[in-house]
Image (cartoon, rainbow, N blue to C red; front, side):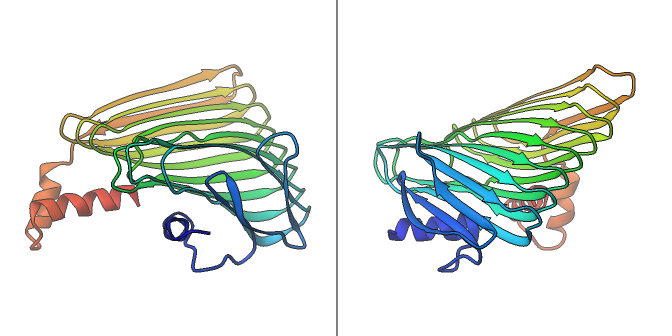
Length: 305
């Protein structure tokens, strides 16, 4: 494992020199370390790059870490990771990706993750993305997530793109069975000429199923963000989509929440709010001794926390 990977791991997965639990560290398309546990088995795929992660039924309170790091330019990393979560398991999955380049060559990571939750399973999924380095090469992270939630299962996703990523297309699709819940909290920061696209597609197929999709973003400079969410209610269900964005400079934010009710007892709501930081917020903080720049930074930090 090289030094750049170690630095990226600290930023995307709170690495302290080791992980407590099962893990697989991906470095420039290869494996830089792996450990399974008694209840969580990590195996390499035989037909394509990636992993099969099997979490046994009834596994409670364990974590699995699957960070990926691209540490130099001229790397185009593609990986397929499948998570099979057994009945009534309750676990935390920590992913994340760091892309680094010091020259003019591009660096890209594309992680395609599929989640198969058996009845009663609960997963908290934490994912951080960051781009680093002084190079002019384009840093790209294009995550794809597919989730299949069986009856009464819960998937909670906490995702963040915390800076330095020049281009990102984030696609999430989910099918949600009776009594199952999908909860997504997304945080995005774009600056300069960066571009970020978010796509959510959720099908609520069972009675009592639910989805709560919340995206908070800050767009600065001449960056461009696109948010598209689609919730389809095919049964008595509840769905909520919310996009809140702070816009600054010459940035552009497009938000397109869509709802399709295909059942009379489908209750679906969407909200979208885009605007600049309110002047009275900055003024209030300046009366406490902060400069205008410090006040703006404090507001953005709180908004994305």
